[in-house]
Length: 410
Image (cartoon, rainbow, N blue to C red; front, side):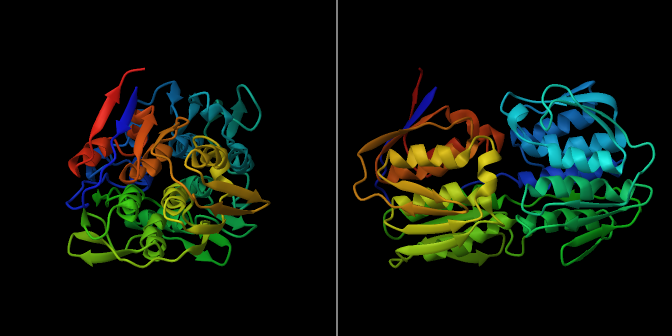
């Protein structure tokens, strides 16, 4: 299946519906389960496939936990089973079996968990039995790898008999996601201490709590992309997202301001409006918000904006190697993504084509990041339903703003 988005020249205006935050939903589900609470106490839970997979596995407690392609679900449930496991297996898609989990497993083993690699060392699938006797209450782990490892360890920390202190041995990437985890733990009555590069959690009990999930800033980022590539003027309303949010992807508002988009925070929503001016060269550190990178790259490539970027290392171990995927697909519109050690440069397109076909590499963000090109050309998206991973209603919302989508059977 492919979707062809016909070139759309009308002014952008209206209101689109966002998903609830997948990141917040997945953390809330794990913490709620550790608290012994009912899932119904979590309001406004995301409909994203990753979250629904997490919910189903926590409720069914199978012998084999199949997380499919959900990286967050894999990492959080691995730590959860280190507390509650009885020898269950956790596995996933072929891509998931090639996404590293060694740093988390090493940490859990040092604490006392019994974890066996069933195929390849350092990668799923795993067989996990719970910690019977805690071996240590202090571990060290790099802060510039996936923050999900750190969040997974933090969420189980209060249920360890001696608590846990985590020393982060490098610069910290995706810091807002660690802070989101600690804030959610606090919402369930667990306190922590985070000073410098050290996080400490004493043994204590979670309390079941009613909690409402906020709207998803990651999902909002794609509409910033649409606004950036749309004709002059126009507006978009994005309901149910908060100004004072712990989501790292809220940074999209600051980044896109440089590309000519103003964000107005109003009661219960934000309004996006386009300005005439924008920069032509922008330096961005994506360490705290790597999931925004694809959206920003596409908008910049098609807007004659050169990007100089750092903090993209984690993109290589996501749903696909996102650096390689972006290099290939940006090249189709005449842009270049150059890599020099830990720095990346995007050279924007000089002459955009009239049409393009985008491969999505089983990656939801590839589909949604490139969709806004429909304001400049016909865009064919291969395997468009990858968006179900995080934003199942995305294409309905694209049609709602007036873009015509033609469904093509392969």
